[in-house]
Length: 489
Image (cartoon, rainbow, N blue to C red):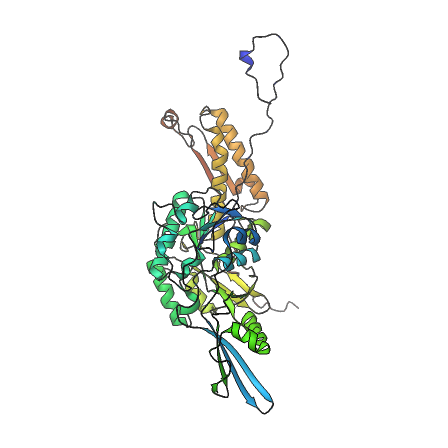
């Protein structure tokens, strides 16, 4: 019921005025709604309208396949079927390879979304930048992901206010590292400008190119040199790639079998898998089972990490670091990061561009083992949880403060604004988001003449609100100190 202006009443009668007892509350914004940007098999809604470069919200894998299709069928898989016979016994070995360096599909959106949901993902946006390339393995085009002024890819995602995360898994498959890191720089610039979202990145082509510690050192140096320093605290990078429990979707008519029996070409050599299915069903079943179970899809970590962000935000809160979390549907990594190697990834005194490791621990699985932004030398926003917590509070307070635009810039309004923000921050303190044993040790809200504003500010229509917070920070290094004490008696 709206309030009545009592000074304007002119007709005799009884009037009721309901007086608000509580200050307006602040509705907390969502923190983990990623936008996945990449190529899809199709991009059509239920009415037949194109969804290309139209950010589309989904909440399940079923919805993704309904609007955007399935994975591109692989045509370049080679099955190496080696048999060594000795009398009535046969020792069989099956391995796999790609027909050439460019034979593997560059399109991984379908598997990426699957990995996102496996690791706790929820509502997300899909920005399809076009259909699959005509030939499997064809090069991706950087301007499909972002080309200023065209409204494509990143630019389309940037216009959606609900989006809080940018994820570009296929960027890892661009023709050059320079193209991918330029795209990352563009994404960081957008996030820094909007100040309401965060980027999850991968290193370039880490699955195929990084095999030794020397390879890793070269790749990391290139990354830290090539990546723009613009707004680094709005992004985080993860390494290495993940070996998943998923099998490739393949075209059996194009999947070649290379068969060797006792060192010479066997009867199945150079046949396609589809042909073997009709001529030798026993061999076909063996090869199909091996292809399904022994040749897993390798993905960049960013989709799984986006799922972890969603899961941790929902169960613990955005102020909890998204780390020390086991990844699901992941059986291994493409590179084993040691303590010594992680030291160089985690801290770089020159650039500050921290890279978060994903590591395997006995009995614990594959864990996210890093929690830093790309601004690793910053005391303010070194940690992902701190940066994202501030984004959440800033956006929540900003939206709530909109109701006071054009209200009288006087003490009554200032009291309402301060009470509204203090109530919100007090609730966050109770949830453990802010450090301090008492609310006054955890935050402050200041607004008013002589505090945050001058007469000139008021004359020019400015209401300036200052909020200070002491966010909790992750215990990144736990140090246990032990000493011996002398026997007392």
